[in-house]
Amino acid sequence: MSGSPKSVLVLAGGPDAEREVSLMSATNVAQSLREGGEFTINYQEIGRVSADELRGLPGDVIFPVLHGHFGEGGPLQDLLEADGRPYVGCGPRAARLAMDKVATKLAAARLGIPTADLSIFNPLDAVCPFDPPVVLKPVHEGSSVGLHICRAGEQWARAHAAASADMREHPGRVYLIERGLLGGRELTVGVFDGAALPVIEIRPAEGVYDYQAKYFRDDTAYICAPELPVGLTERIQAQASALARSLGVRHLARADFILDETGTAWLLEVNTMPGFTGHSLFPMAARYAGIETPRLCAMLVRAAWRDRSAGA
Image (cartoon, rainbow, N blue to C red; front, side):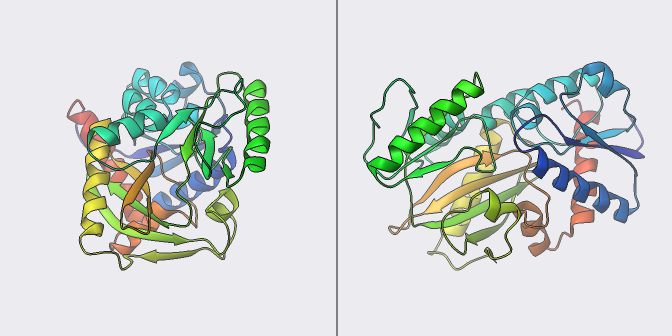
């Protein structure tokens, strides 16, 4: 494959719970690429696309801005590999590992990155294996979908019932129970083409950084390059980059941490297709580093073209 890409197929939507976020992110990616003026843009909203449908959508490079299990957890990546065109983001194996919060935490533990104890949720057992506080959340979802924070026993009982009902409604969905790291400072590190971006601290106006705070509320504060204990910024940047490499992630990712009162930063999870909405952290960190979103998106397209050309 020679030359350079002339057109980009931006995929939006998907069948997952985060479809609404995907539509917002993909719209911004398409608009940013149009503003850059380097490529012709084909924006397509999809559901659970088939291989034949994908082949019928024109574009030299595919930018799949989908969030959730199908869109960033492996199934779409299988289709993209079979399609053969260069695409932004990681391949099927890395997508599956990073979407799986348990696999991600095991990879982090092997690298010596602190991460909270966990247990797989058993809906047949009403007793929580950890003392509160605990967090109950799906293993293969993002954007705080299905998140339950339990500070006391009665909250656990409600969360247990809600998660059990959700699993009955969505066969195959699995939840995990994690020791709650509540009250700490929420930090995130973007990884762009292997290099860590500036750290961002997230300060919700109230409660936790949930779905509404992430995408719709305007009262969440974001502090780029916050003051942190000596050496911590460099440490979590190195950890985020190392974890992305360990999982096989390419082009872009975002790792989320909680900093406790002892100065320990605990890994929460890794996202392999971070949001591109007006509130999203990955493009925010890139802008702080001097990379505006149109340039960022174009660089991601060129990275995809480069890696496919090299047989990556």
